[in-house]
Image (cartoon, rainbow, N blue to C red; front, side):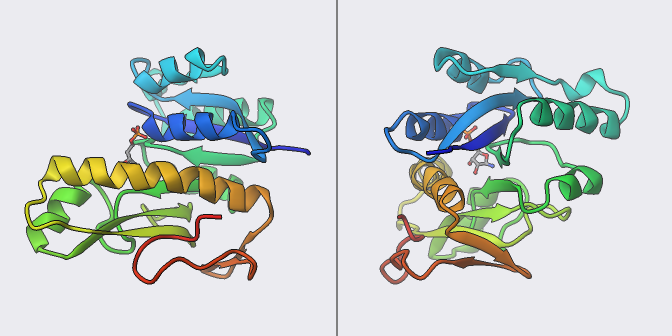
Length: 217
Ligand code: GRF
C-alpha cells in the first residue's frame, strides 16, 4: 500500500500530532508522517515527534523579517519531504494567501468549535458565555480566510450544566484526537473530495448517529 505522505505543523503541546503519530503506527493505516514543523522552538510536540523517531524541524517565524520568507522556508521543507497533505495541528500562525494557494485542497486544519461558529481564539469560553448547548470541533480544508474552508468532519459535543472552560477543552480534545486520524484516513483512501465549497464523502462511509459525531470510518 502506498501511504499518503503527511507534513504536520504545530506550535504547542501537540496532542493532535500525538493522535496522528499513534494512528500512523497502526498496521494498515494509509498515511505516514514525513516531517513535523514547529514555528516555536519550545513546542512540546517537537519532543513527541522525536520520541517517535520522526523528523522534527523548527522554522521560527521570528527569524524572518517577512511572513513570505518564513512561508517560503516552510514550503521548501514540505516539498523537500515530498509532503502530499499538510495537517495543521495547533499551528497558531495565520498563513498568507500565497502559501494557502500553493497547498489548496492539500492542507487541512482542526479547530475547536462547530464552524462557522466561533472562529478564532478562546472558542470554549465564548461558547460557554453564550450558553449554547453544543460545542464541537471541525476539520476543514484551509482557505485564506481564518478558520474557513470546506468542512470534512465535525463533532457536536453536548455542554454539561456544570461545564467549565477546562472541562470543555479536555472533552473537546478527546473528540479531536479521534477525528483527526479518521479525517486523514478518509482523504488517504480517496473517500473525501472537495466540490465547490463543500466536501463530498463517499456513500459507503457510514453516517453518524444524529447529533453525535462525524463519520468515523
Ligand atoms: C486544539 O484544540 C486544536 O483544535 C487547536 O489548537 C489546539 C491544539 O492542541 N487548533 P494540541 O497542540 O494538538 O494539543
